[in-house]
Length: 231
Image (cartoon, rainbow, N blue to C red; front, side, top):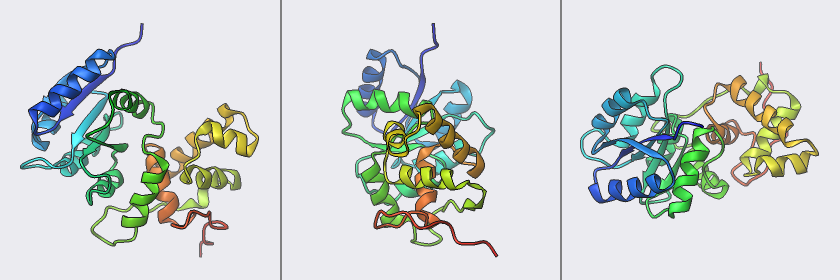
């Protein structure tokens, strides 16, 4: 029997934490710790070793963005972080994703979506809705030094991997990628895993960001012909 997922809830509103705890518990997901601010969250992660952290972005003292940075600068195997926000285009969300968070959810998420998101992000699969990912990148990707941009060299990718990355950034799921490329879904998963490994990325969310930031995919939604030639 597999071990239940272990989740830490970080939110300054007791009512939000209570509601999420009930929803997750009803689906067999263990809430192993709670925190009312970012500093508490960082300390609680070290004590309880959760698989996933649900992190409110706006908290007193140490906010969710700084807490995410601290949590994800540790050794490999740190938990996945899902950012919680009231606004789907909160100006801090992009910076949180670039800092290593695996996605974000609105606080009015349905119970079914919440539990599915926690399970999905634990596996490293996509969490953000493609349309929301594109909106985030379009609005924030080229704002300058106030974002912790993910700069990657795509020269290490094969032509097929570049194609997969471009389609992934447009929001295609593994099943849709397999149909589009006429490949087995297992082969697509292998390509995605190799892309993440070569670029040193945590998950598909960061891969989407990189695809836009490097110009592989334009904000208009089309893939570029390929990365610029390296000098």
